[in-house]
Image (cartoon, rainbow, N blue to C red; front, side, top):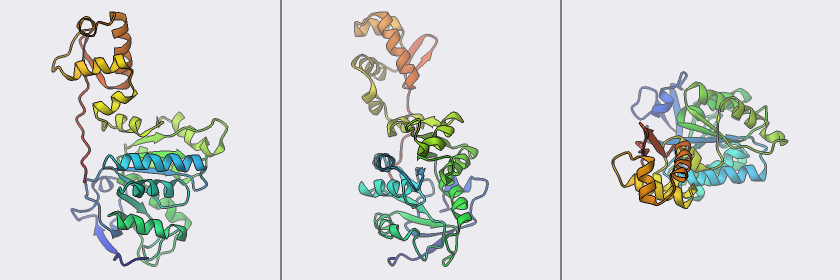
Length: 295
């Protein structure tokens, strides 16, 4: 590979990733190449099957790129299929991404992703492993590294996975740590999505695009959410955003010149989307308390 030196960060170091430190079984020592992420970096994992469809890889790539543009670091396992597509999507837009390997960092596995690993490092990203240099990529290590992928991330997005896949384990580990799990649905009879649909049945959040992910994590700005609304809903949101007081349906009807039943219908939609809040029969914009830090 290139000249990036292998370094270490210990669980007792202040620079150790904070979210990983909070998990049940964090590695005592992490080996890494590249630039160690800020311990409070905003990270989201994107995972899925190695034997992914072209559509699945395209979705992973596009989602990773869109999230990267928001200053989010993409985490995955550098495997073939969805993992590689996610890393590629981040570097395509000049974003940062963290690859967690199941072998020592003396080499990249799979070999086919050596150039992708160099691109990751060249853009200020990082390769992580809990294994010492020289350790080979044995089967059980891939399962062990999944807890690191999940542990680094505020949420895990499963793009495409059959019933038997390491991505299912990553999702389960994320849920056990109290992190959000999002799933991109696929065709009802496509076996590559059987695991994905099982996750949805088990309570994972459905995600068709990155805006839904950001919204559910309270990371979407109001102006971004308005892109999915019709003209009347955007008018109501604009009015609510411009006042510090919660207002009644009658008041909104008066300002917008819309019938009260129409205002009520639009408010129901906005309440369901999570962008509007109701207090005592009055309505106001739901303020976003969390903002993404662009590191």
